[in-house]
Length: 153
Image (cartoon, rainbow, N blue to C red; front, side, top):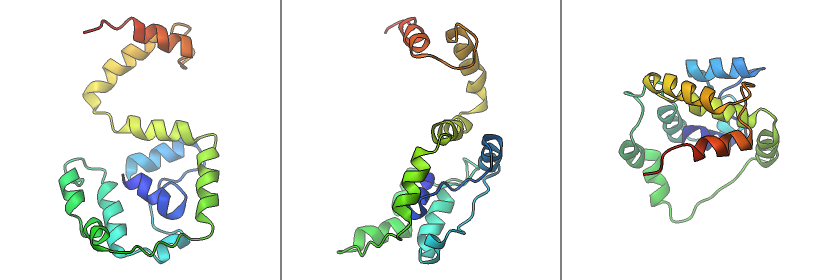
């Protein structure tokens, strides 16, 4: 939720890097900043909400209930009319980001970084089993065949 809100506010992802390994390192370290011009007018409450969503320590990260009760979310419910102003460059930045070649790969890498350690080895074994040609990429055919091989309940 924090990544999505960050991108919605400034049009760029919170984790930076010149290459995928740099971005992954930034994600794993939880390195992000509110240094884009769009954040100059953003409230401290929304920055706090994003920070609590991006907390790397799962035990310290906000729960869904805590997110719902967060002051920024509660302020949104109380507003009768939203004065939504989007900085001029944000829509273009979002389109540029969405069209970036690395968007899918970086997003999947970020999501994969959230998988608990105890499940990673099982997923790795399943991937290797499905990746018939061993190229490290699942083709549509390999994926369909792999899913078809899973016993149905």
